[in-house]
Length: 223
Image 1 (cartoon, helix red, strand yellow):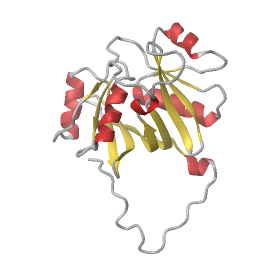
Image 2 (cartoon, rainbow, N blue to C red):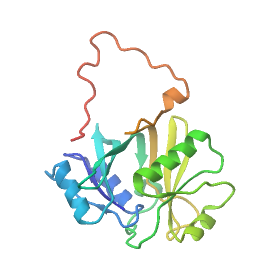
Image 3 (spheres, rainbow, N blue to C red):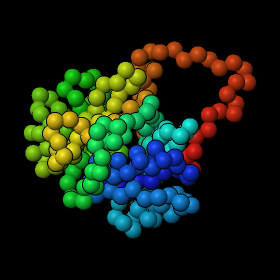
């Protein structure tokens, strides 16, 4: 499905996040970045047969952004970006030592039962970014959806006070609760112009910066 790595000089928490994602994206691999360039990462992903490259960008010690890139030496390109409020690792949700999924099974992307149109739109976007399959939830249980598509892993889009969340279920581990990681998304942007910002959606006014303020900007480790 995808090769997962980080920006240069990642923190321990960001590396743990990458390992957690490896355990919920079937047939994916987390790889230490080292000094590799984007082009070298793309070739590595292509040689391994992956369709996506996922880079976890860091700011102030925590994952700030998830960057998704299409893997194709003739037509590679950035697909979209998720800007995060924060994450909750699998170990923080009570799960340690999960094994990666090395079987060929789809990642099903769906929603919680009572969500808005924004959540439905994001579920479709997340499926597109990850090469997963979007399945409308309706009144169906997660178990029935998983059985229909012969999979053990689902990404569920849920409500969050400041945006929306992605929670992951591993039904081979437990059918009772999500295993994580829990990802809180505040903004998503696609290269084709589609985007969503929780402040815009909730009509939250953002204070204007004073003259000269923020010229340095908050710098993220995104290379």
